[in-house]
Image 1 (spheres, rainbow, N blue to C red):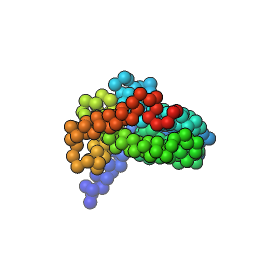
Image 2: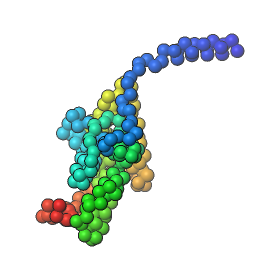
Image 3: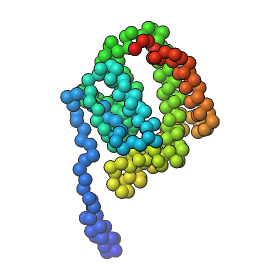
Image 4: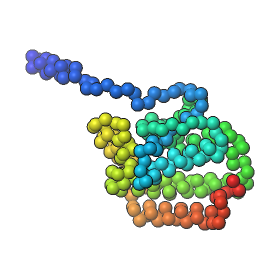
Length: 221
């Protein structure tokens, strides 16, 4: 018992040294912002080789701009604050945090005129091509960013290491990689490079055929 008490005492003395350093909160959420906020990756830290990591952020910005959805853009270095764990995400004036397809649904529900120029056939085709892109192209992008060790180290990791102190700048990117690999395995029985690249080529060919010589995939604007 005496030995146990000594151990507890030493452990208490050890814990008194923590935290070693206190830092200001990286992000303080606004429950109901005056205008919707779209959180995206920090652009000034992206090299040419890192542009693929910004694809979804650019996509979301384009949708909100085309729909004239009132919002501001705010750069972020904490993807895990998103409900999906990925950027971009949208914080609405109602306090809802939306990511992925939810952003488009919010725009369609808030801006009824957005896409109203499309025929019923175009709308159905647009939904089909959206699903194709999300299932094939998105999976291929995640594979290239996280499964390929060279890209994960040089492209993806810096996005999750930025602004995090040691050792978190080493731990968090690797935790994110494991998370992404787990997600990939929930979508497929095995991760086969040839199959994934074949799916990507098929999807890109379908988009190319649909676009042909037109300026837009669907409609005239």
